[in-house]
Length: 227
Length: 121
Image 1 (cartoon, helix red, strand yellow):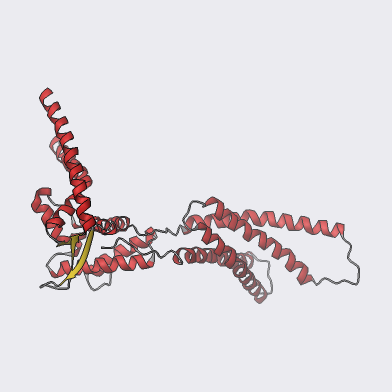
Image 2 (image 1 turned 180 degrees about the horizontal axis):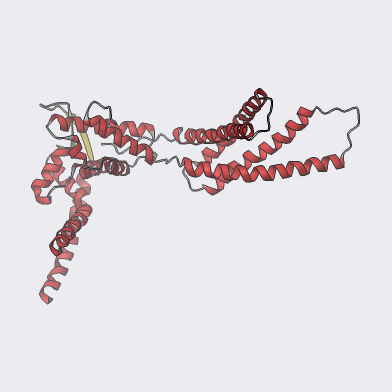
């Protein structure tokens, strides 16, 4: 339900929604909206109904206007990016686990540490799982880069994923461990599911953030064709 | 039923013809006299194009502005906020001349072709 004060506000809100869907940059949306508001308010003052001016489909009007204005469009494509990131992460997680296990066994067989050397369990475990996590993140980023190579600004997105995912996944894992610790690490479906969900939500939210960052920064070319 | 199809077909045909020539006609109307957006809609109607919507004209004016063929200036209105009035730029005048020549030549070829078909039918 609309709470806008005027028909002009309603139309501009509908147009802005369409421009967002099309991936029109914020600066361009603002400029297109300002110009359109001035036109519609002037027409309204002359006794013309703004809704009649734009026709029955303001979204189609907004789409046409964005096309004719030649504004840069960067559709977010969150769905395909999340799907590719998730798929790549799952495959890489399996590969990483097999790889880390294999390397661990190979090193144990090849090297015999002297008894004086004590490797803390947390360090060994941390190294193992950090290796698996690194392969998982790398696989996810690589998959997004390859599968969505034609998406605009995908290189920026994967660069930001590579930057943001390691600390975010580390934080999510820490949160999952804290959650498990609070419950005394029960091996119930609920506890394990919740821990997986915490890490997964952290991973996916960070991927969305990386994409959002890449399409909202540096791509704010002015809409040269605004009337 | 047949009549409805014929009317739809004629409207669709009219829309197709308009699509290829509306930008040129807008330039011509603005060359005659600067105007604001919905005034152009009225002028198109008066010129005989029928009801061309503002939703068609405004995006087109946006393109012409992007191409540097029209410029705009805010002018005070007696009825409300200032209105954006469009006028042709020098580039717009040059482009209109070129498009006009091209159109006349093209229309001549089309007319000649139609005349030949008409006499042989």
